[in-house]
Every structure is written in C-alpha cells, then in structure tokens.
Length: 137
Image (cartoon, rainbow, N blue to C red):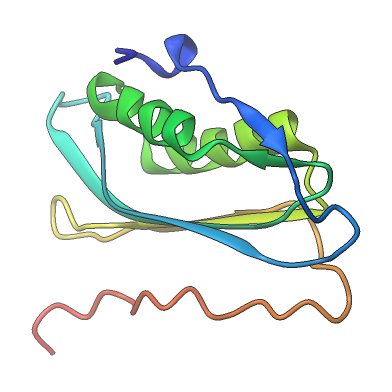
C-alpha cells in the first residue's frame, strides 16, 4: 500500500467502447486524509464521474491511490482537486467531475466540486446522490 499520493500509481486500461459516450462512476464513501494543521483525520464521501475516451482507470489502482491519502496532510480542497487532476492527466477523458462531500470537523462541513468542462451533449449525467449536510434539522 502506498503511504503518500506521490507514491500511488494509477493504472489505465483500454476502453472497450471508445466510440460511445457514457458515464463511469466511482464512489468512495470512506475516503480519509489528515488535517495538515492538527494531524487529525478528515473523512469524505467522494463521487467521481467521467466520460472515458480511449482509457479507463483500473479500479484496484484507484482504490490503492485513494488509500494513499490516509496519512497525507492536505486540506479538503487540495485532496479533491488533486485526485481530479491526477485522473484527468492519466486518462484524458472527454469529461470528468469529482464531488468531495467532507464530513464536519470543527462544526463546518466542506463540499468541494471540480470538473474539466461541460459533459458531451446527449450524455446522461445522473445526480451524484449525496445530500448536502443538514445536521439535525
């Protein structure tokens, strides 16, 4: 297991349907990293949607890459955007978005969203399905 995102290796595999626009989704409901100020754990529910071109991300490598953030100190915005940029660099997808739904620490939930542009016309992009944080009411 890599102990830092720089040590993580994302692998790609050929897309069996490069002629078709479709959305592939990965959900990581137990993503963890460390607060760079306090060293305490931060937790997020990540949803990654992308329209592949010639390549797909190999799922085990993605799992291990995400795991590499476990001991990595970075702000919520840094983690979320770094993951999106890494996948975009590797895959050169037609479109990619990532939603980072971070659980509250210090009483403040932070949600971070990043995408590469507009999804191709005619592609069904479902809602990410993660409700905004409401606390008790």
